[in-house]
Image (cartoon, rainbow, N blue to C red):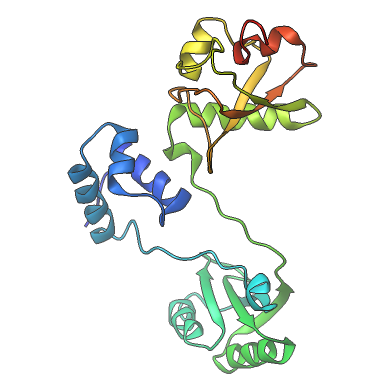
Length: 247
């Protein structure tokens, strides 16, 4: 069955893509502004509709056991591609198979093995299926992140600002004093009251054992360690929001 991706569903998907293991329905509910029961029902609907197809661990096999990961690009006929993709998944060592719409190299197979010979076995099995292997590459790293367009609006802005600021601009870490002007205010409030300079951007907040990605509604607390970017050199005026009057 089909399902409409409204704002609530998009925020659920964004949260689960970001960290499915440590994200609960009450946590999403608090962020989105609905009840936990609504979030649980929506997750069930997304799973039943096949939108959320599973929850998988992102494993670094090299770090785990110095194993090798290889990406095979292969070509299959359009008619045979779905069947061959399913069969490729059954080969020992294969962890991911992707189909592409048409043309050459329309099947990508990701495999893991303890050594080169094990990966050669995977290649031989793919060839036995009738696949033509066009190329194979050792994978160094693979990184995942949530789809930003489904997240809160403040996160989109912060992300784009971070990219524009990151090239050659100054980055500092600031510990917020107990009686600093910004304490108890959200970043949006602080900006509206002129506490934050136009050239500065708070990109992360370290609080106890957590590192938070701030949004406009994130409240700053005493003792927070903020990572702040600036398009220009930092001076005392940029720090006044985070320090006590006698700091």
